[in-house]
Length: 505
Image 1: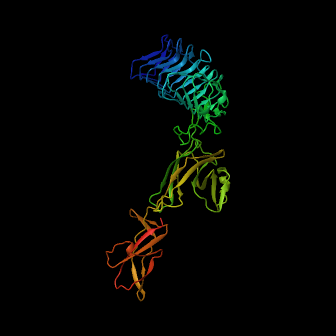
Image 2: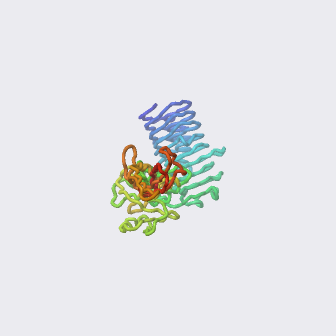
Image 3: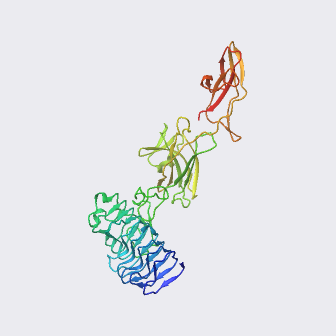
């Protein structure tokens, strides 16, 4: 392992790793080096790890100024590659390399030989290049080459350069959920192969792409609107360091929740955002479970906060909603923003129609920057022999700017406390062959030795037999009542009775 080292001023590459494994280069400065194939580090036939390093002011007379990796499985992660001088082919060159091993690196503010020369050169690579920022270089952002059938998926990347193209393509490549914006010469120039672009924000759109026409099934669900970065807002802001400006998307950005639905979801379980930096604006429902033990009709909802709930804001809260067929005498909201005014009339239910779904308002909780929240909410019907009777629930973060609903979670409740047994049966004659059978009213249920008031309707099933050990069955059933008594008509000199108690849930 080489750790916390300064590797500098070599005129024949700062460090070469070839035919060597189990090597880790960590938290090092690689600077002021030059070479032929590579200035900073050259890698081949190795599984070495290069991580958390800073490459600067390196150059090469033949290939890559900062880093060259070819025919290897090395891991290159979380490095800053900036202010290197590309005097030949590229700043970083990955050749026959597994792009999934290249993660979290920043390639910014590098000087290139011309606007056509790339900061990152991908040659016949496999795997997926994802979550990279390539910004404010004065050449092309990425050059893709690969004519031997290799694919090159580029996913959730941010490509913004002050000069040159965002991407030059002379290979096979697919862009998915990327932002290519603010590049001095244009977003993309393409020759030789048809490429695929989907769910991405491309400045200039389909007809702003230079070279081979992109259309039909190769250009799907893309946009061409300003991504609305927090800062910079409109351009690449080439005068500043892209690592200190804020590339986060504004709340009104068209890139939020418009990435590829087939990709793994963002932290708030919503569709992935375009670009490198995702927003998790929505609360995340983590639990919708029955409250136990109880008499039913209660659900335990729990959720994690969204990123807007970071400090106390007057008027910010979470509202809880249940999908259902709305009751009569309901106030309909034009939008959830009118909930506060609707709550001043507490005599009616409150509902909101979201497309073809109707949501009934249940309750709210102030947003006070907790990491997680919880609330016991009512259900319409408990699970029973007739069905689960589940419903969808949603939690919504609301403030003066808008509302952000969680992904829906389904839940159902159960009455899991059985009523107590009937006690003290008494049989009294009222007339010839007619008797009044009575017993104590059941008003409690028991669970693990503790008593709970019965909240649901109690019913009593009465059974009768000729012996104390008679079988309780449909043949011995004589009646059902909700009162703790029943008139029995019989001419028999001796009869035995048994009461089965149940509740409506």
